[in-house]
Length: 65
Image (cartoon, rainbow, N blue to C red; front, top):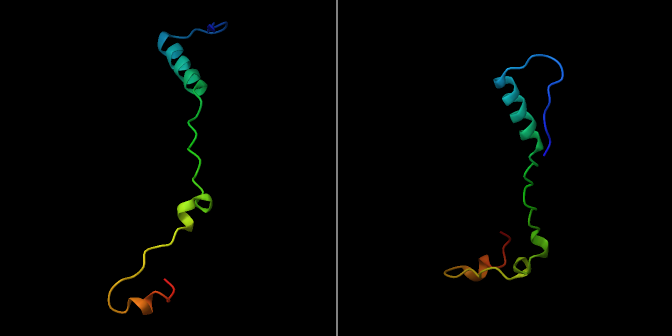
């Protein structure tokens, strides 16, 4: 455990507490964001999408979306 020693000056209890909180907050590591999922490796990406049904479905099946 590290100790804090004031070697020069006259600090109040509130100032020391504020300093300890500031130093302790810097010691906490930042939370990393989870890595982004890459869809190009996902096997479901290569799966066939649904086929249109109903009137004119055969025509719309060949048209770009």
